[in-house]
Length: 250
Image (cartoon, rainbow, N blue to C red):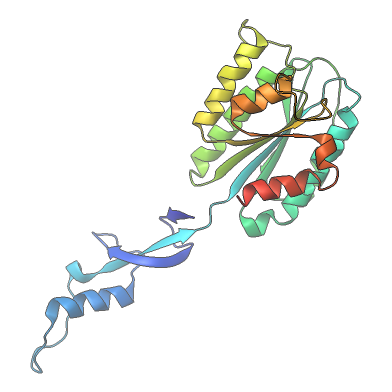
C-alpha cells in the first residue's frame, strides 16, 4: 500500500489540513474542534476554526509494472519462449485492471531490443501488437537490460508508487557489447542499476534443464539481478504466469 495525494484510495486517517482544504475529513475536523473547546458551557456556541480542519490521508494499493523481456535470438527454444511470454502477458492483462497492474513486452535479438508492447492494461491492444514477432540473430542482453532500466525509469516517473518487476526469458548468454566492455561485465553493471531501482526479477533459463548449475549464464544473470531463477521445464506444470503471480503476492 502507498500514500496518495489524490482523492483516490481508502480513507485511513486524518491529519491537519495546513492550508490544504481539497479533501476535508469532516469527522476528524469536528472531533478536533470539540476537543479544543471542551468543556463547553451552555451559552457558548460550538465553532470550527481553521486550526481544527483536518484533511483525509488515503492509501491505495500500489500497482505492478511487469515487463517481460524475451530473448528472440536463434535457438531451438525461441518459439517456446515467445509462446510462453505471449500467453503470460495476455493472462496477466486479464486481471491487470483490477490489480492496477500494467504489463509490457520487449524482445531482444540481433543488435537491439524492440519494445513490442509498452506498459498497458489493455488486452485488445496487446492482442494486436503481439501477433507477429520476428526472431533471429545474436543475443544483445546488455541492450535489453539497458532498455528495461529506461522503461522502468520512465514509468516510475509517471507513477512513483508502482512496483517494478522484470521477467527475463533467456539463456543469459549475451554476446553483444554496448560500450566495448566484456558482455558479462556489462551485464553485472546494468543489473546493479536495476537492483538500485528496486526492480524485482525472475529469470527463466531457456537452456538448462536444471537450475542447479550455478555457473550457467542464466544463473549468473539471476544472481546479478538478485532475482529468482527457474527453468522452462520447471514452469511447464504451473506455467510462467502462475509463477509471476506468486512472486507478486509475496
